[in-house]
Length: 452
Image 1 (cartoon, rainbow, N blue to C red):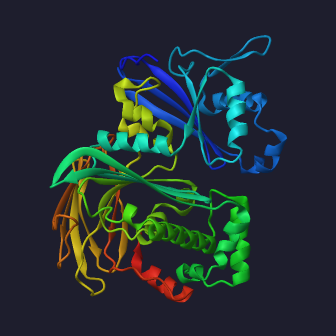
Image 2 (image 1 turned 120 degrees about the horizontal axis):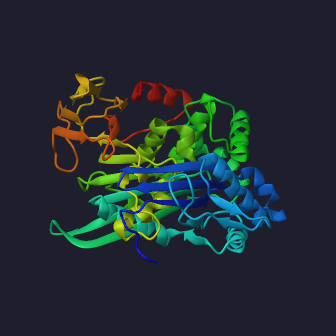
C-alpha cells in the first residue's frame, strides 16, 4: 500500500474484537489544522455468547453495526443504493467518508473462526488482522523505540485472561547493544465454572479485606463472572475483584519471576501500559495496587491507563509514523495522560514520617506544596493545566530512588505532549504482607491507602 502524505486529511475506522467486546474507533487527522482525535464506542457482546451457535455474526450483523456507528460518531460512513448494496463511503472531508476499515480479532476471542469468516464474507474492503503475541511484540518494540524507553511492560487484565508483555533494551558493559528482548507471561481460565470455583482456594481469603461468608462470597463472585458488568459500585464486590486481581498477578509473578523482576529498578526510562476490563471496573488506584503488590514492583516508572485499548488498536499506526499506510497518529491520540509512580528504597520503619516533600509550579496556577508519608500508598491527582507544569520533589529521611539513588526529582508536564495526570507514591515497608484474615487486611488497607 502507498504511504500517506502527512499533509493529507484522513479518517480511518478500526474495529477491535476482544474479550467479548467490540471496540469501534474512528480516527481523524488534519495536519495543517493541527487537528487529530480518535472517537471510540464499546459494544458488550457477552449477551450474545449463548446465541453464537445460531450464527449471530452474519453479513446483516455487520451491516447493522456499521450503520449504527454512523449515528454514534455522527459521521457519514456507509452508502446504500436502491438495491441496498452496502459500500463504505470514500473520504471527502471531516464528517464525511473514510479512507479505510480494519477489523482486528484477538486470538483468544471466543468463536474466533466464526467471527473471522463473517467479516471476510461481509466485505472485501475490510482489512482483517489477528491480535496475537507476534503483533504485541511488534507494537511494543516500536513504542519503546519511538518513546526512547529502555523497559516497557503492558499489563492486560481481563476477567478470564491476564497477560503481561515486556520489551527490554539489552545492555552490555553499560552500553546498549541495539537488541531488544521480548517476554510474555499469561494466566488463562478456560471456563466460568473453574473461575467461579477459584474463590474456594484458601489463598483468596488471605487477600480479602471484606468479612463475608463462603456462601455469600461464592454467590457474589459467581454473579459477577456470569454477568460481567463494567460498572460496579458494591464495595464488597470491588474488594473481591481487587483480591482476585492481586492473586492473579502474584500467580503470574511466581511462575514467571525472571521475566518480570527488576521492572522499575533496572533502568531510568521505564513505562507500563495497563489495559483490560478489570481496570475499568476497579479504577486506577486499586488496579495499580494489585499490580504493584502482585508483581512485587518497586522503583520508578510512567504508567498509562489505556482503558479504551487504543494502544492495541492503533499502536502500529503510531509506530509507523509517516510510513503508515492507514492513518498518521501521534502519541497524544494513542496514550492517555501518564501517572508518575515512585516506589523508592526506604529505611525508615516509623509510621507517618515525611519521606517526600514537593511543590507544583505553573503559569496558570499558584504554587502549591505537597508531601507523602512513610507506610502509605498515596495517590494524588494533579490539577488541570494549559501551561507547562513543573513538579519538584525531594526524598527525605534516607529514602532514595532506584537505580541511581537520587534524592531530588523534577518532572515537567506538557499538555498534549507528555501531560502528567497524577502521582503515586508507595512508601510502604517491603515486603508487602497480606493476611492472615479479612479483618487484618481491612486494617492494613485503611492505613496504607491515601487517595483522597
